[in-house]
Length: 505
Image (cartoon, rainbow, N blue to C red; front, side, top):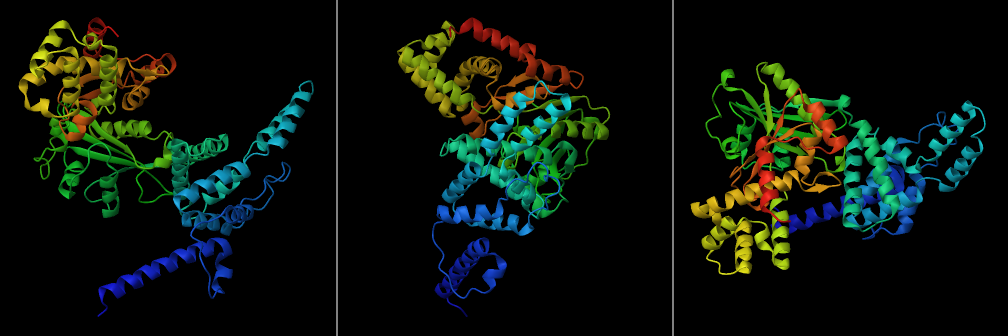
């Protein structure tokens, strides 16, 4: 029997050996590696090593005349690039991607010369102009695009590129590299992924309790809106009166790309507790007569590298068609959506009002008195500070008096946040922007709809229904995208009107 210290030492050595082998394999290839007797692995990879692998695997762009005749590079180039990249530490990955984007991109000199030539041919015949334009278009292809295309054709290559773009997005978000080259690499990757993950190539899969354990586990892990607590909870969410759908792709088998959870209900739900904490739905048979509405209560994108590649909106549309086929009488489709960012926005607003000494601008005179009384405050500053503390905690939930005082105030402010706060003319709230782009209307704001710690922290317990009136979705989407018009119900517009009358902002 092997003692624990010996076992762990052996295991650690084995891990180290496997890591070194992968690094050498990337540099030397399998043939050279098989003849190695000894080596020392550096702890960091220098620019020389990066330059060597990139020069070897990133082939020069074929000439315009031979672009369709040049033989593809060997598959080993793609595999070597993938093995090398996976062996790098995070910081080295960032340096490697920066070098790839900067040194192996577009031939700017050649493109400039062709641009000048295009100007010179404007008085020539159309065929000549079109040919020069085509040459210029081809010259704007980055060298690394060929490599990315070839990587997509090897086993595991598409998933590798999805993860690679996630790393590129991390570089951009961290601002560790603000050169235009890394953004150009991101644009190239996004364009390629948008083609590979076009809706026609995606497969709609319904997830049930009889789906594979692997995909059920991933559904549980990827749930980002309302965390799944255990297997019983998961069984409930794929059981009777519930539906779970995912888009999958042939190049990433067993990997859900975007997941949508649906509750089948009699009426459009106004709180999440009735959906995710309902215990009476595990073993019952569905009664079709009780299914009048479909409530989309969670949609999660699982791949950071597919950010900006439209999948969620297509998933909702496909699911609507699927549900209409199963329940022909169903006519009510709605989301029950969280409102991330509302509490942060409100805190910033209250801080600004306190700083500028105009806290009463947010509340009516009667509301101000009620908040003062409920919080035992004796000055405007104390009242605002007490209000900020209440919003960051859940203690007001335990007081009927505080809850009744805060309800009209928070409902009014939240309606304005959703409807009136904009970024470049579109809804500031990302969930609102998503559903409005899809053609939904902002239908109902719900008080105490999510009293979980996350719901209180993010949105003071408020949730919103975005209603999908199927005959109007195309028109609503066009109004929003082209004219930045938000279609909203009387309830939402009434709360917005109250905000505009009461607040002096």
